[in-house]
Each structure stands twice: as structure tokens, then as C-alpha cells.
Image (cartoon, one colour):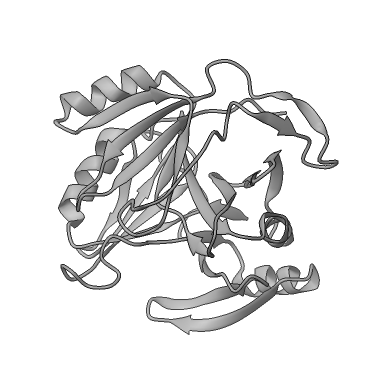
Length: 267
């Protein structure tokens, strides 16, 4: 089992609950400072942080798995460092990549997805790194499935929901919370506006975001409109196609933003 589950740390849990609900995610657990949401594909966790604390507004790249020990064993056997450890919420697996990036695999509470969640919305976990090919191999080693490859970007699907994305960046970091939508982004924008939330739909480019409340590197990637490379061979395989360049930018609690891209057809 492998499911995408980034963790958003925030001093405004109520604001994030309102935003995620408007996007079509469904709350599955609410313990005040620890809240879990199902999307149609993937999950998002909210964790409370003190206002102004270093982790306020940050995002932790993360996944959920079934058997922790088996996941660690298979990951190590495939060439990526993984070790069981005792986290503050229980046992988990820490994965350490060659570029120094680390992330946590938690044990899944449930293998199912709430049917009320918007089926078109998929959670995207983003890994920023100078070494795209190396990070992509690490994701293959944890069981992610190659989906798309571009010059400076690689994407993977997961067996139990969500998308893992690797983007080239000057430094290694987790990207901000993002989604992909297999539906009408203009209709989603209208739904957010009806809920009193600020969103703007644009065509073409998606900006790189760090995990710090949507702060940007100042670098823009035309991720969807350029030539698509075959994930296996790296050879050109055509373009992403019309309509795949739309990006909805949503104002998030705390002054950051999240991005929602239109779904890129499978190659």
C-alpha cells in the first residue's frame, strides 16, 4: 500500500478546515490539533502550530503505507535508506534520500476513501531538488509508479491515491500543498468564491512553491505545455495537450497559496 499524505502545519487549523472542505475534501478525523482529510485521491493531514513558530505554514512531504516493517524492508532492498523509528504519534518509517531529503511514511489508519470526497481532486506531494533523476529513482524504490517525465520534472502515481511530483530547484525542500483536478477548474473557482475564498484561474505556468506558506523561489516552470518525455526512455513523446496548462491559485490561511492544476493526460 502507498498513499500520498502531506502534512500541513498551521496556526489556523479552522481556516484550513474551511478551505479543504470547500475544495471537496472530507474530514475523517478531528482531534483539535490533529485533523485528517480524504481527497478523491490521497489524503491531507493538518497539525496545529504556534503562531509565528518555525513550522507554522510549512508542509511535510509524506506518505501512508500498510505494513511499516515490510515497507522499510522493500525500500532498503531496492536501494533507498529507510528505518523504523518512534515518532511522537507512534511508530513510523523515516526515508532518507541521497540528496539529503527525508520524509516519513506513516501507517495508514484506513485503506478506503470517503465516498463523499470530490472524486476529481488528487493530492500532490512535491519534492524540490537539484537532482531530479536521483529523487525519481528514490520514489520508484518506495513503490511509486512513473507517470510523466519532463526535463526538470518527474511525476508518479501511487497504488492507493495521490500523486508524487519531483521538481528541479536550487535546494532540496518539500514543496507547498498542491492538487490536481480532473474536472472544470472554472467551476471549482466559482465554488470557492461562493464559500468566500479567494482564487484566480490562469493558463500556462505553475510556480514553484516551498513548504513555507506558499512562498515562491521566484522561478516559474511551464510544466504542462512543454515537450513530454517518455518516463522510461527520456525520449520526446509529444506535448501535454490543450487545456492541460490551467492552474487555479487559491489564497490559503496565513497568507500563502496553494495551486490546483488541471489533470495531465496519462502518456
